[in-house]
Length: 212
Image (cartoon, rainbow, N blue to C red; front, top):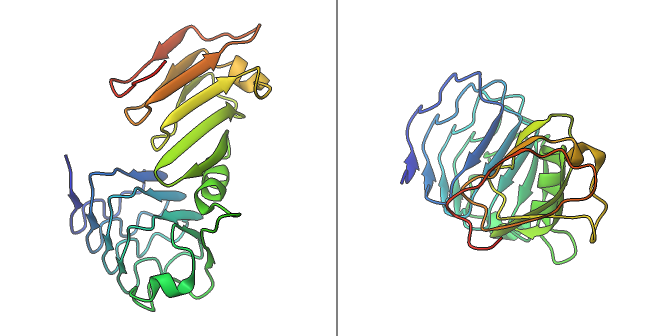
């Protein structure tokens, strides 16, 4: 498994629009995603402890970033090119006192995680607006509906549980119209109580599933 994303690994990679950093990664090195100008969202999983200086510098179009509670160090200018909204696993500003004071743009917004305001759920519903999520934690993400327009879709990479149940919440017409669905390796539980009119003909499940 990859444990570090090295110096300049994805520098100037303008085809990237969304990034999910997996749990196996512990550090993002300098200039790892430098000048990735079309990046819109960044999800960093709970294995990461260090984000180096300039890791995302030059990626000026990022709108949403989730940084988990495991991160203890963020270097200077890591995110200064963007005025993104940052959703943190930390509960308050005092919890990030070890981060470099110049880690972000002064015009950026930071939202902290509290018992009544889960930052991860806010991030998901904004960054992945084609999907609906149940209240989640940074260790366990649940998707409950689809609102997009595609007929072939992939479950977002950080999702751990798929819970599509028409008895619990009304399944959208958009989800009924999906004909092909790919379920990634992070998904452990999959539930699809298919209502009348569902058009799903192709379902790809991962080896990570423990419950159907």
